Length: 609
Image 1: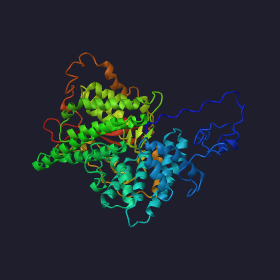
Image 2: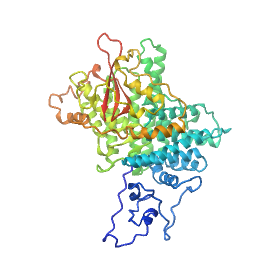
Image 3: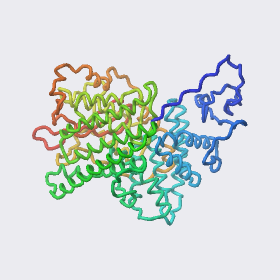
């Protein structure tokens, strides 16, 4: 999750060839070249595009213990290599310090008996390895194998026989498919799988079988955390049934940190369900008073539960010293407690001014996120990919919703730190969110209305060619059209939330043939590797310069107290992140209507990233 990249092994002393190396990989020995002995595969083979066949066991050392033998079920050295990479590297990165029992335990155990699971982790392993290398030819080789395995996983799942009792296989494979879609950056497909998995959970009865116990303790926590990846991208997955939750009341103290995290994300799931359901009635002037009272009661209940969670969490973490490796994970929980507190407290307000009451909470988010980022040396980086939603969304949200001019720029600065370069948390990209936040700050604080003659803003009606979408699903193309059409055609009455209707989700998996034919192209043009474009003036740098260039007039008390020089009419009510394409991303901004207008003011821009 937040591991520091390992250092390269020390160089051998003495002149070249002075000592014969007998411990190199099999491939380098056959080629009679010096091996760097990188584990599990040497970099020399990887950089030259060769297959590293690993190492023969040393006669003087004991073999590394393994929970599974990779031999059964694998037909090629490439499959064995991908499995080893998953077991030794990918599972550890996906797990972080908390989830080792899932990615390194349940998933690996199921892969020994379920072909769908086995093929899926081979795809995940190959894609994860490709994300860590920038060499395009290596990425293309890896993705061909990855998508073949992804197609095999889908075929195996379709051939999986329905059992009489609830099985973990469809739910587990669905999580693995979500991970694949996160890695290849296809948000529409990822949302589809999240909604599918949550729909399956909502139909399960209350049973006591071993399969049900595994679902409750191993899979429900994962699906609870996936709420962030779903609600924040406009989806609305089915609620998790009460009988699948570990408890109905918040405990006074948690037995483990895992319990504390699970309880917070169940509460966060409830909060996101609440805020989503509240949006329509609070904008409707004809909403029934009883409906509003029910929402207010639910708001009070959630705030009370958040207070109880925080007390129990504080007691739990103070009762015994925590491992330093856990500190970043604990700070992520503290960030989401602060974020959820703001979300719930402001869910029934249509204006943005209420957010100004939570400046201390925004400041706490910035401090905690800074601590996490600073735990990695400035010349290193956080892991480039995380399955979990961690610090990018709350820091981005702080930058666009906290109007204190210095605090929001501090949040923007965090997104641009060297440790965050190329950082991706499932569907959230640090670079993209930084560009959107910088543009939002510029819009709200500009003296003029939406200047478009900026280096990072394109004419919103000249769409780049959607090359990355040419071979993907109809749902993805529909989403692209929705987010790239002329904003003058968009009319959203102020009696409705400032948003766009999401395209209806599809609940059909792509065929293996569709995956094999379209996905390598999709990854090659995905937003994880945007086309470089020259930018004489970086939008991020322009926004950050405001910290140094605020003159005495700008720093007078009126600017550092609510409303911070940003009136309600200038504030962005919603910034919808649309498709990424051609080195940038589409963003749709909603603001208050002008005098006499009854529809939200909608503008749309293509921002280069």
